Amino acid sequence: MSVLPRASYFLRTALRGLRSNPVTTLVAMGTIAVSLLLFGSFALLLQNMQSLLDRLGDELYVTAFFEQGLPSAKQRELAVLAATVEGVEGVRIVSETEALERFRDGVGSGAALLEGLSENPLPASLEIALVPARRSAQGMAVVAESLNGLRGIEDLVSGEDWVEGYLRSVALVRGVCIGLGLILSIATMLIVANTIRLAIYARRDELEILSLVGASRSFMQTPFLLEGVLQGASGGVGALVLLFALFRLVLPEFEFGLEMLLGGIRLHFFGLGGMMGLVAGGGMLGLVGSVAALTGGWRP
Amino acid sequence: MRERTRSLARRLGVGHAEGVEPRTAAANFFHVSKSYDAGTYALQDVSLELARGEFVFLTGSSGAGKTTLLKLLFAAERPSEGQIVVLGRNIARLGDGAIPALRRRIGVVFQDFKLLPNRSVEHNVGMVLEVMGRPAKEVRARVFSILKQLGLQHRRHHHPLSLSGGEQQRVAIARALVNEPEILLADEPTGNLDPELTVDIMDLIASTASRGTAVVVATHELGIVSRYGKRTIRLEQGRIAEDVPAAGSAA
Image: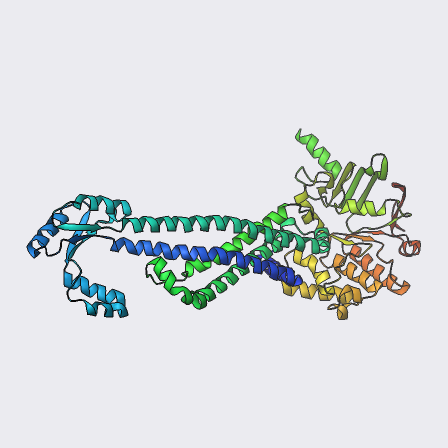
């Protein structure tokens, strides 16, 4: 007995099964697609937030603002001192002029506001880069504490509060993603299981005859398993298409708000692995759903 | 212990405990009874042997046990008492997983045809070969061949409901014969056919016996029985009332 004729039979029978109840099939696929779209949206948000966190790791600085008018020699002295602190990878002095230039670049058209100023209000500062092990809210706090109180330094800004808040947001989105994923997985499996149960009921005469002419249980069950997989995977493809459409068409409308939330990072869609994961995940849920349908009262 | 096992295996018509096929018997019944309710027997103490290539008519009034006997032969039912060995397999002890393989070696013509109304004739007949995993090309060729023998090749794309009762019956026969079974069971296979077609169909069924297939035909049409002069088992209230050997054969 060859594998190929059987595989061909299973696929033909599964497709015929899906076609024979188009409304039920489409409703099931649509519901799965919406479920996976919801999950995919949060997964995409999480992916982008996570990538911002990875990128920020290289850009986390502790900034020490010098007192106004501190002589350059004293600034260099403090820089040498700061470089010796444990956890510091390197230091760089940002002069008043450079600080103003950066501000000008940062505000864009708002730079016109600076035209009215008679003198540069921005202080010189020391940008202190941290070793990778200290690139966290806690690590920043430790380094900032070591520099606190040094004569000539007026203020220390480490951004640890922002990082802590951001990490909490990432954890929250991750939690939502997992919770939503679990709930929607169960919902998807139930949808597929019910659709397959209906299909089994609709084809009970055929199953009886197949059994009488010598079809094994696995021979009769395989097309239903395949139907479940196809429903789930199709739902996954549908979710992917919808998500991509939303990403391309709707997201630009909220770009400003998202930039504020994500710190100006450019948003990226799923890579090939992520896209295949969503479709395969849909297929897997479909398979589990159809297994549940077949094990719950399958008596050909 | 080994000798006892061999002795029992010989009695049951099997080569040894694992079930090597007997050389001659297609099926053996040893004191078989079947009851659905306690005390009500559909079959009672039936013992018989069906040889390979043998043609047997099963007669008797409605409720005599003909259909039950056929069902026991293809393991649609299990005996309540006694042993049945079909193609070397003991039905009473056959695991559920082994039944499909046995059924693939047996062709059955059901009284109510059991055709799928929304599938073509070709699909209805070909499903037996698809179950066996035959390639699509071979399925098409063999289905066409058997339909041609039964004069239905031009109807292969039709659905059963668009066929006459006689044509549906021939489709059921085609499905039972398409995989060249070792045993053919037919429950009233000519019930819906006109006299001329009845003879054609019975000739076809009889010819399968001459090719080595054991054939059991349950019928109440005594005209056919007398025309063919084959071994005839008459059932009465679940018991064998008469077992008449084929004309010209030793009893």
